[in-house]
Amino acid sequence: MAKRDGGADESTGELRLRWFATLLARFPVGTMVDLGSGHGLFAQLAADRGWRVTAQDARGDRFPDDDRIGWEVSDVRDLDLSGFDLISCLGLFYHLTLEDQLSLLDRSSGVPIILDTHVVNDRPAPMTLSDPVSPQGYHGRFYREPDQATHSTASWGNSDSFWPRPQALYRMLDERGYDVLASMPFYLPTRTFFLCLPRAGEAVTA
Image (cartoon, rainbow, N blue to C red; front, side):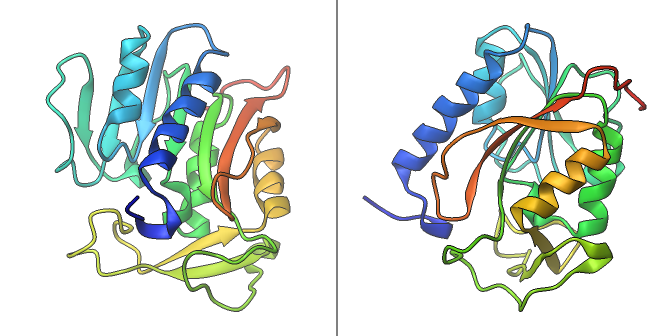
């Protein structure tokens, strides 16, 4: 079976869709924004289940033709995240700088997030990372993004991104009123899903 970037293959994609559906089923149907939607398969899965979906990506060249979904080509750094019942962030977070990760979480605050991302742990990373760093006290490593002109999944607008250690990710979320109440097993050595729920009494600030 052919391997994709980061050690993923076709079965990995099927597993991600199944786990996303499992986490999505925890919520009553409503409005969802799918950040960095890419091929749009997760947005379509949510639409199949009755969700009203906005799918956002900086490129949009892989969007399928599906008029049930609002397809939006934009920079996630400028996106208004208010008014949604759920945010999915699947494969985008680890392509952002720390500053943009924190901004995204600030703008998401009070809204549940299904997050699928790489972290730095004690297992071998599928990409070459920097030596350990601690910007703003968040421990992790930097990743040098590939050429954005030739890689459709590379970051948009930044040459380096930040991969936090798990405890740094938990701290980011905790500081913005989130508890990570469920996470799935790691389906790649450094990557898994996290279910991020606002703590009781946390108001939407957007």
